[in-house]
Each structure stands twice: as structure tokens, then as C-alpha cells.
Image 1 (cartoon, one colour):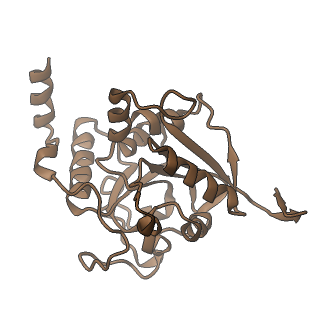
Image 2: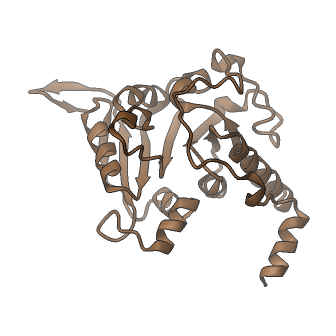
Length: 258
């Protein structure tokens, strides 16, 4: 069966990971002139990102954002899970090209499907408002981000006090932010930073939420952790934090209410 599956994938041009090897992580705060960024969302042409749609303004309809998509496991799952447009962001050029070829192959293999998913090489830590409008997103996903264990590198973490202001700008009131990791210290960091921010309130990661299942089971890192029997969330698998974007804020004795 494995040989038949391999032939089938090759027939549709599915890429092979061994030809897209890349460093596991990179410094998102370093100066990188390898690609250009639009000045504002109005300057962005989305035709190459969502080729199946043939719409230069398709990016304005993006509602789901997968930040640091890796090899695209979650993005592919989201494409099948919801008709909403999903944008996968990846900073590493080879990995981004792999995801784009993977999506192209899936569109050929399943005509009419996966046109709602696109991948863009982009640094979300520095230039997210350049492509995403205010209150545009319904969901943002951070799946198994680099822990940056050293204290001097904590400023490189994708979830931080400063960056949460930008995520709050992009996320519509009532929208959800999902963060999953297999590193307990990083999970506690996510929760502490989000709890302290006035624009976010924690909500239960309900096991019946299909997006919780997607981030836990669809990403390559999630599958690897499951194989290794990692201990997370409720003492068994994966540590997940889910937070809602607060719409209005009032302060009462130092606390916030919506």
C-alpha cells in the first residue's frame, strides 16, 4: 500500500521534504532583505498566494491565520475544515516553497478543494499590519513555536506583551487565539502574557472544538509529540491555551470586564 500511495502522490506532484531541508529555526528579529513587504494591505497583490481564486484582493477575505506554519499540516487541515480563507505564514524560504507546492498538488489531486488556503513567506513579528487589516481575523494559531529557552532570546518569542497588541489589532472582537506547545515553561509564558493583556480573556479549550483537535493532531510537531508520548494539557497530551479577543473593556478595582 505504501508504494501505491507514493506513486499516487508523485502523479500529482506532491513535494518531498528531503529536498526542502532547512534550519529548524531562524532569528525573526534579524535584518532580512531576502524579500519585500508591502507598505499597507492595499499594496498587496494576493494572486500568487491564492492562485485558485484569481483575485488580487483575496487577502482581504482571510479569516484564519496560521503563524509559523511549518510544513503546512494545520493549514491543510483548516482548508478542509472551513470554507473561510486561511493564510499560512512561514519565514523560512524553503519551507514556504514546500507548503506552496504541497497546496498546488492537493488542488490538482482534489479539483475544487484547497483553493481557500494560501502560503506566504512573511515575518509576522515585524510586519503583520502590512498585510492584515484591523479586526480582519476570526482565528489566529500559534502551533509549537520556538521556545527560545535562553532568557536573552525571550524577546524572539512569537507571543509577547508587545506583539499581543498587534494580534489584538488584527483579531476581531470575539475572535480566538490558539497557542499550543509541548514545553510547559513556554505554555506558562503564553498564559501569563495573555492573562496580563487587557484585550484578551481566557476561554476553555473545549475538546469538542474542531480547531483544538486540528492544532493538536494535524501539525507535524503535534504528530511527533503524540508518537513520543509527550505530556501536556490535562496531564496527558499537549498544552493548549485559548483566548478570546475582548470587545470592550472597563476597569473595576483593577480588573477587566467585557
